[in-house]
Length: 349
Image 1 (cartoon, rainbow, N blue to C red):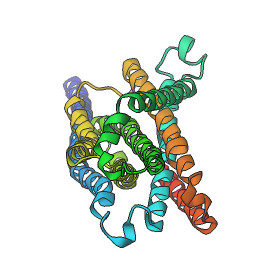
Image 2 (image 1 turned 180 degrees about the vertical axis):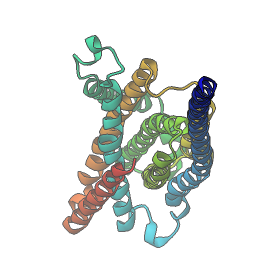
Image 3 (image 1 turned 180 degrees about the horizontal axis):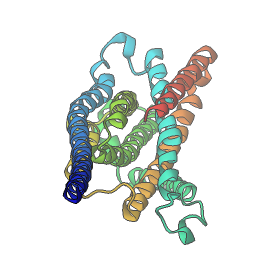
């Protein structure tokens, strides 16, 4: 009887032990399976993100080329002639896009970086670095604008006048003086357009590198997907604004090709660089936050100055729009449409 009791107790003990081992094994298997599922999901997310980034490189490159080349390619068509109304309205719309890019996209990104909790509180939370850097960048852009005009007026004007000297008749002193004065004004305006095109491209290139790098380093497919559409829209119409400036600057074919190339490849190049650095680049590291924040603030200051002063104010205070109130009103509507459309893109980018 005692042996039966001992056997029963031993059997019960073995059953309990068996159940315990099975439970542990199940928990271990569930834990290992959970880790495997997480690893698989992360791997699939990275693969999906990489596919989208490759797609982004080609779609953004195409949009950039179409945007900046379109004003140059259609310049011979009567509807799109440089002094025509359509050209004025397209440029006004593109200027609105550039203005909204600076205020709605680039400046908030800089705020987000330079006020991040990952940065030391002692310095970065005690002073509005974003607005300060943007303000300094705008003033420095004004300085570059002014000094470049002074330099080219002093050293480049004589060459321009000599190149066009055969257009002036030298028969009468009065007509010669009027011709020289007119030529001086035209040469000054041309130099102004050339400086505007160069400074505008500089601001766009700085921002394009940063946004391309951020997209390339991202591993979140849901973030990248809407960003592709937003950047294509951005590059298309911002490129049209820059292309219009290149057209007015009357650069030679070589210079136009260089500026078209750099505008078109900057964002795709940034994406490719971000892909290569995705394993070592960290969005939340203090160094990355500071560099990206400072570059964005600088770009915002430059773009805001260029959009307001060199593009919008120059056109709206110019003779063409000042002498035509109806065209001026349509141009304002075009600016608001550009601002509104690019601001709407901030919902996804």
